[in-house]
Length: 366
Image (tube, rainbow, N blue to C red; front, top):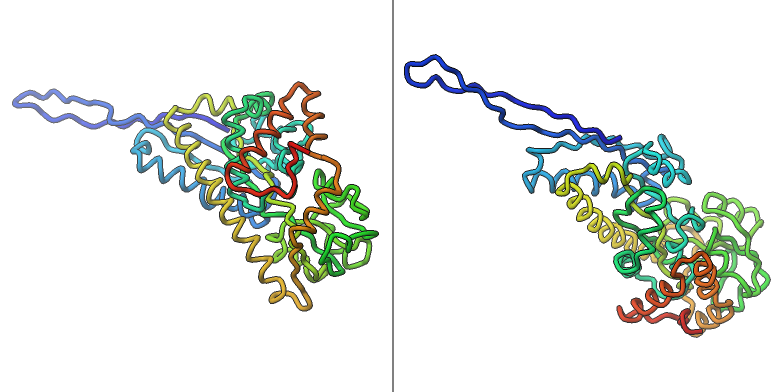
């Protein structure tokens, strides 16, 4: 928890001329700032989280020193990952309550508390560019006041966000065209379940810790997950066919800080936290993109019997158009909460197209 301690040093003055007078004056008054960073997952589970430890924390110290602020302030970091202080679904509340000062908050866990943060899950088939998703979400936070207001309700400040590489399809059978999934049982989690609606497949709510065993035992025929998880979870052993459907990169987590703590920090320290958090987003999103691409490309090499397929654009169109307009449904639900769901949807899609994305379906139009 944030505390400030002041250390002062004294230096003896010189003996002047023939007098015996000694002059003393304070040399410095250094504030010690204690910050606790917490996450519910182990750092090995997600690269953006690992980079909180390996990039964000040391980079803040590095830039404090470069700016000469280490003479005035010293940050004492305490890091608590893997649920040792806060469980995965309790980070938002835990930081709000001051149990931790800074937290890695999986926004996907809170569609009720952070509804506007779910926009990428409501708009599949838009872009597989992780960095572009991150930049677009950041722009929404900068231009739509309601995005910031979501966090204000919980007494926290969002410093930055991070996204996952494009979700793809792992199956026990080959998928080369949209019709191949008809009659199959496909799992995924939370908001991504709506990507299976009206497709002829049966959606099965599950999570990434269960996909392997459920596919291996025949409980399901496949699942949707980001490929960067494959090397660690060894999904291709249970579901050897990986199809790049192009559901898209997904915004999924935020780095947040308790507002009371934030407000007490010196302005120059807050500025560095924001600057480093912005660079953390860019670096983490870039690494996540590379990890996803590499995991997909190397699956046949790393797993016996694994095969890759890429769904052609016309088959992507079939899948996307088979779905109801889940984006407009999402926007309408958000609008009813007196939040700008429709405004956010339009802004998100326009920004994507402006940046060069070629959505398989223009969710804001049809």
